Length: 268
Image 1 (cartoon, one colour):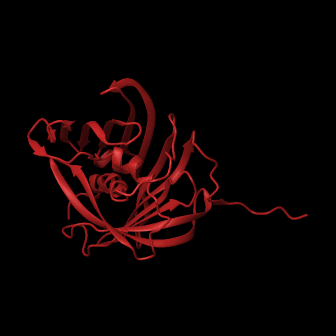
Image 2: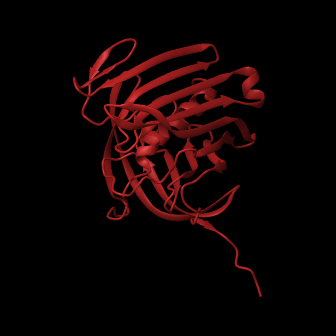
């Protein structure tokens, strides 16, 4: 099994991709200046919780315009902490420029250093010629492509009003010079408890590729607040030994009140 440290961060951003869909109807559930902070950890029998790192997602409206359209600029960062940082340093940075309304990606950059394994890449999405052009290659694309970061914001527009429990839908996304198709299943609504309190959530189960880390195609779960913000508050993946979790621990500049949080009623 490969080192768990880079896997933890790849899992975190990969899973955010997998809740995107082509069915979007509601207004944008976020605003410029929003920031979400996650703690990422490995949880296994006997050894308990090992805090591996943190991940941060920020979005702002850009002064730049592309084809006359306003664009958003979003950054996703992941970095190792504690003993993980000493033994296997991880510094991941992903940047995306996408249409502020349709959220289709225009540019994507990746700067990762995972224990000395370095990847630097830049991708331009050329919709006029239906090509994604990276440093290494060109591939054909459709007219609305999501990258690793834009997919997260695109996903939050997901219209779940007509999706039944157990309902599934295909997902297409761009990653590492390839287009992928996966399937996601809506598991229904659930109340969960995290370090920030109790929340009403919607639960999702995305399909992944079986291999060295996953021993079945549906080992992942993601819980998203059941309110207008649609922010992920818990991500969990069962791995061969233990589980990997990403948990929201801090946020700022949400567009709407966090109505999904359950507060205790005061006694009179």
